Length: 477
Image (cartoon, rainbow, N blue to C red; front, side):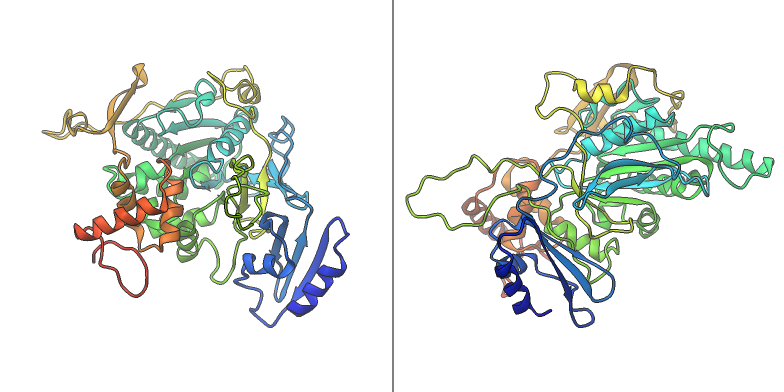
């Protein structure tokens, strides 16, 4: 079918509820599809209504819906969170209604899993993690959690997991303890002549969960090298003795995950969930091999149902439908349908609460969490290092009773200059991509004019490379 044939069929099928078109092209012709161009061809002003899915070989399917089929989702249930005979839980649905499943345990090999959840700020990582944590508790799986957003990312998990920490130093103590526990099991199973893991015979299935893992693994983190080594060790030996690893991170680039090819290769073989991303992040995923070269994913818009229209001069702007509403939309990159758009079931209340979300607390249940807390492992301080973290100054500090002492976290970018320099740290960006990165970094809204002025100022201060013919904005070489 040629593009003109596709457009003709679209015109003839205007009155249908949902229209489906099968495409067949020359070898390789389907790859790299331009979603915006496809919407223009079909005369669709709301891109979220058009779902493009690549099949095997030279086939692809295009479906045009009256509204995005993932616009509304039902609430997650206790049944969804119950592990099935394949060791999976149901976390959501694909756009065609097929359940979106995540493997928590492999009953054939006995292995725990290696799971990573990527997504930009506001994409739904915290709610996705809540579903996993609640499922673990209800299935008797022991969880040791590091919530590196000061405990704010998944606050309902406190009291519902065996170990709960929220500082970088405590997270390292947790990782060291988990690796030591895995080594004990490894040696004990060897003495028993056992080559695999059997749940509760005699040990429970356990997971180490690191939320905001990029804080441990990004450039500049004092724990970067050791954290990457410990996570790799859990991935290699821990999984075969029933201790898995889960990372939730905001970035997808290798440099944001410890700069370790071994670590990334290990995680690619696990469960990889990609929530809404930035263009910079997508390029990194392709470059790092998490998405095959030439494959394309339909973009997940920040706002569903927003039509592309020209604003008439003098007409009042209607902002009523510009609230982000695509949280939880995702791709399961290591599933059998890596390019099929899906979405998590509704997890928690629709509006915020002054305290803990009662709906999420209900998902966890009132029973005590399975397992016992890990005894965190801290090496003796080297001479001259005592109190150094608190003495650095200018950084955010927090503590939590007797769960951990005072720790200094890396200061978040505050000024527009700092935010621009931080966005460009992983490579050159076009102006559009830079604006998108600033929109996703959690700071105040950055207007195009202010960004252009600040970029010009930074170039004058020689903190950015001079303007060149490429039009890209970059740091000096």
